[in-house]
Image (tube, rainbow, N blue to C red):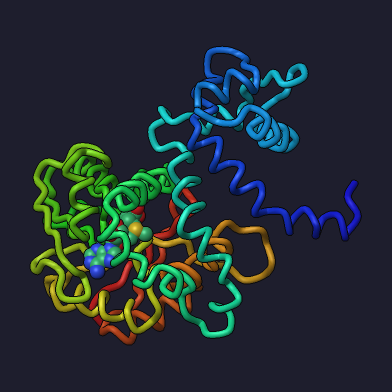
Length: 331
Ligand SMILES: C[S@@+](CC[C@H](N)C(=O)[O-])C[C@H]1O[C@@H](n2cnc3c(N)ncnc32)[C@H](O)[C@@H]1O
């Protein structure tokens, strides 16, 4: 049993665990352990690492159940490390890598974000997160893979939760890799789709990252400028949480203007709850603050946001995953 001081110390070491995970993902250690137990020396030579340094990282992660040290310096896979294999479609390894590079570095400057309410990312990297990604294609591609990683189960749940039977044209605004749209179109053969994202997101979707996209128009554009017109459903999954109220309102107003008069705007988000339950969303909320300048919102906050954009919250659909669909219509 840990004393309160020890528990706080462990939390204070969170940075070490996060970076240790990043290292083993980058060295593909879980792939190397897929078929057999391996020594630290074997793992290091396969990944081009220093054997003693890697051993110490492996020992730390084994103490947290990520690997098992079966005899001195010999490691085996566990259920947790198996989840880090790079060949698992949509596994968490891409997200672990993505969040522990530029986003991680931004957290070193979290006090700046707390003092000013501004993003530490922009101060450190000289541009807002998504503009910076535009100029860094490798990281932008990793970001899209990470979005697939962190969406596992959620895209299926959102596609299943809403009844698209009376819709004709669905516009996925900020749909990135396209997995949600792909699943919606697969379930609803009468629908056509439009995928709007920045060029890197569209490129990943066209390359098939999110699955097949037939009956789809691809639009590389800027949702602050305009969104494609004439859709009867506009869906924004994990997009509004990237932005403060002013920027989020611009996107929602553009959807309101572009949609057919009886159209709907679906905002798929994890709604932040009251109280002090453990919730991954509370981590993501701070990431939004320090990295992109957005926030996770409660249901009343979403309802207010809609009202400022000529929309009204019609209902909230809980899905089978940790994500809800807020359905808004013209006010
Ligand atoms: C958090 S990701 C969510 C992606 C996807 N909807 C999902 O749930 O996995 C936000 C998306 O918004 C896109 N985005 C950011 N700024 C944009 C802009 N100005 N215009 C269009 N898309 C933008 C990003 O490229 C990214 O794909």
